[in-house]
Image (cartoon, rainbow, N blue to C red; front, side, top):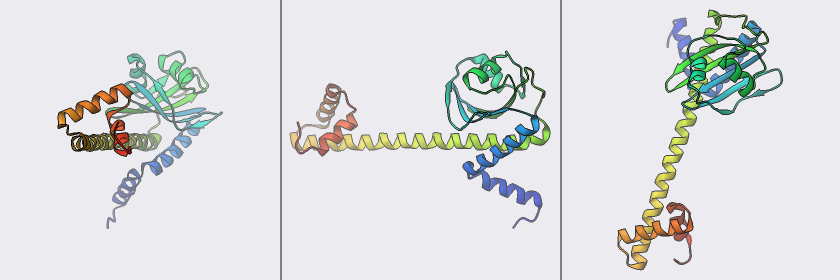
Length: 225
């Protein structure tokens, strides 16, 4: 067992990172504390992908939300949101986007991008003033920001992997159904494999349904059409 305090701390962090939902909650607590310390009246945690922005967390005086997806194809805007930590004054592309599109009730902002290819997680603090009262993120709150950003990225990665796994399973299940339907056609109608495949493809087009769905319907029917 590690006795060094730094080793113990690292192990505790590692356990947190294996539970990103818990880590995100803890990270958001740190963000809320940082927002109060900085005097921010709005707070957001953005996950930027190739053509969209996912609002992983957003808090204003009026509401608190966790999800929301916004189209974002403007290269200049993406650069402003993901380039370097620092202020975004009122009227800048980033400030206009965050106020009007992301719904943050603020005029100026302080940005903290955290890079994890292919995504960037950007933490946003919003202020009533037209010029952010801070030019940089204080060093003593950076650790809390890093934790929240890593947890948000981890959740996005888990969601992406689950989605890809589900799609792969669906495709595999669909191929199995088609193979079973082909075998049934060959057995019941004396078709060869190519003829059975062409029959399924033609019928699926005529009915405007996926071939896997057609195969499922035919295998479950009392008799073949």
